[in-house]
Image (cartoon, rainbow, N blue to C red; front, side):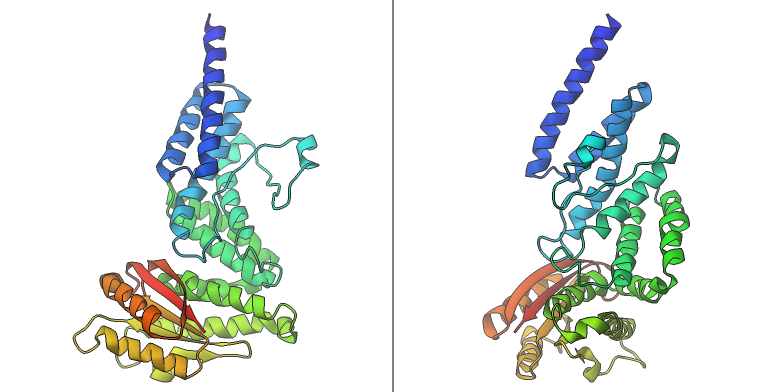
Length: 341
């Protein structure tokens, strides 16, 4: 009798699993993903079924990644980030991998924490720069994958423990393989705290990658990225004003590929929307190829108004508007936009 009940339960779970797979195809909500992960965890603890244990591992990794991906979709370029879907494979399945699919090794049950953080890192390493990944230098790609993985894990359950595990395994492994990733990793942390990593630098790397794909500058691309990163880091550290406030000339950066300029949106009495609009018009007249608009958390409505005004009253093309995990004052949530010639 118990065996029959167990068989029915397994069938029911399988049916629900098929339903969830269908829902995933159309876009499953973050709450549903987490609920499904918790269900499998509870069932796997009460059962010796290898099927349930494997499903529990699969859905836990998916839930942690996808709950953060939901927010990252608002920050990164459009169509970059897709939800992670894991599927267990056997030797026969390996030979039938489709384009874009990869293999990730899952460790034994006692190393599930490592499986989670390795799955997170693997996901970012294979989802960034979908159209230009072959042009982006490995050191830059590895550093970005580490930084975004770290942020993902920091927003998950048991964050402190998982972050320690991450630093002792994935981060240490990447440093051992190439210690020079630290030249990028530390600035990436600083830029991410001010919204410039996902807001500007990633977009600059992607745009430059496309432009130099078949040009001689590609041989020196890592140095070009480093110089761009250094400019943004210096700018981001000094945007609060005061004695060491960033000078007007430093709001613009030019290299052999293109020119960009920052416009920080501030809603104060002396700086109305038209004052910012005039700066955008001047940027176009100055030959600036890419204009970034950044608005602080408290100025998001004002920033939206400016974005609309620039779209309607300048010759710039409105490429996209995006959210920011941190604004340029390091407060949670900001708003950005990119305009191109």
